[in-house]
Image (tube, rainbow, N blue to C red; front, side):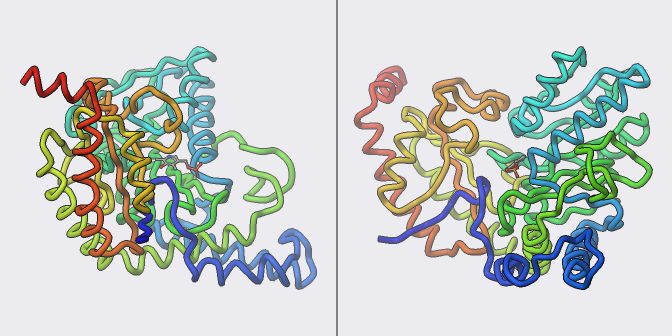
Length: 391
Ligand SMILES: *Cc1c(COP(=O)(O)O)cnc(C)c1O
């Protein structure tokens, strides 16, 4: 049976280049980067070379890149750090959007318990924050704006450059969760003008459990982990050298092939969307133009996303109903509710997310298997019967 991995927004396959680059640091080169003998120096050089590579891919200075365990950790550090920095000056207001990743939303929940106030910007039907609404929400006591670069469920790309300009004008710290953007689309920290940016290796064919934060020079958040002098003393603990090396190699490769790959992915994405929209009462979620090249997110009225996923799994297709973090819960996705979908429509969602490992043949296969599955599931659905009767 054909096997198709179409859940690259949840995680990606570790690339061969990354694995090959990592292997020596999992075997022969096991020295501690803080040690002075040559085996340690070998590891130190690997970490610093990786830092240079990551910085170069983002147009950052290497001193502005700090390695850590991934996107959730970067989001926690950026948001809690900037909030606590603001609180020292009496600023306890934060602005975000309604459809951030839970690593952002739940971090804000915990800050609210400490007395911070949070404004949640609307993302409208197209899944995009409006810069004028952001500017209106900024107050004297706003410590931080945290808006994601690209949404992990519906793939919509936010106007981060305009947001960056507004934040600069009002002297508010700007963090962007760029976990879905880094490696997927061009990310230039100077062009965005952000102060803090989160990324995670396993979203661009690097290993799991490693990521980085960009922290603009001159901005000093409270240390994340106290201990040794690693990561300039701000995030102590012996480095995940193999992970860091794998991340840098995967990112470099993603950036090298990006233009050509994205042209191909956009074509595949658009053909799949057009094909699936031929299904009765289907809809595409999120803006069609300002969206990640590899993201398709559809709703099929009158069925449950979970049963669709199980049927697709039987056909060899790995997909998602939205965020990997909400699957297993019966609540519809907060992202789909944020773009205004009613509960019963949001339940029938399907996210297919692609990487350079997917092909046109995968799209052919998906267009062949999905429509009959939707028809079959609807024929068994009392909800669908009601929808048809009422129309
Ligand atoms: C995956 C993801 C995260 C979490 O990253 P981890 O490395 O898995 O902790 C955060 N934000 C977004 C937008 C993501 O897609």
